[in-house]
Image (cartoon, rainbow over all chains, first blue to last red; front, side, top):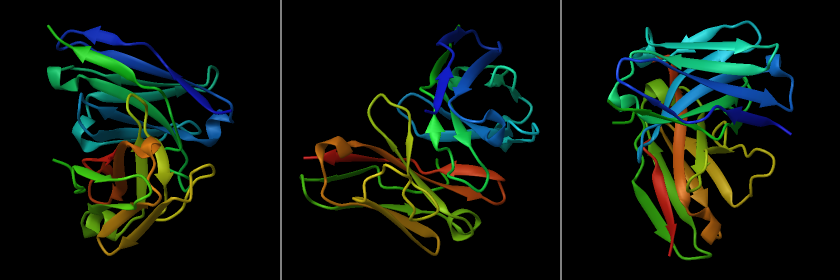
Length: 119
Length: 110
C-alpha cells in the first residue's frame, strides 16, 4: 500500500534552513510527483509547490520562490523540501502529498513534520 | 486571508445533512475543477472529492460535491460523529499558477 513517511520534528532559529524528507513506498515512484503543503498552528492549508519525480520539473508558489527548493531521489524514493531564511511565521506542520498531473490531486499525504522557528 | 471563502463552521445532528460552500473567482473555481479535503483532528488531510464531484475509491457516497460558476459545495448526508473534522476546498488558480485552498470549515456533530 502507498505510504509516505516524513522526517521528524525540527526546531530552528530564525535565518536558518530546514530540510524535510518524504520517503515513498508502495507504488512506482517516478510515475507521480509531490506537492508540499504547510499548515500553521490552528490555520488552514497553504500550497508551497510541486515537483515531478519523473523529470524534476518544478512549480513553486510565488510566495516561496527564492526560499524553497524541492528535489527527489529516485534511488531512495525520497522527496525533499528545503526552506531557507526561516522566520517565526514559518512555524507550521509541513506535509508532502503524492500528486499526479491529470490524476487525483494530492491523493496520499504524509503524516506531517512540525517545524518550529524560535530564537 | 484565503483565495477561496468558506464558512468557518457548520453543524448538524446525527442523520441530518450539512452543506459547505466554497466561493472563489473566475481565475480559480470558474476555470478549474474543485477538490475537497477532510482533516480529522490531529491527522493529515485526505482527499474526499476531486474534479468537482468525483469520489476516490473508499470514500462514502454520503459525501457529494458540486460546482456552479465560481462557487462549489460539499454535501454530507446522514451525518455521523466520525464526520467531525475540518473540510477544505481547493482549486488551481490560473494567475498564481498554483493551488489555493479555502480557509476551512469545521463540522460539528451535535
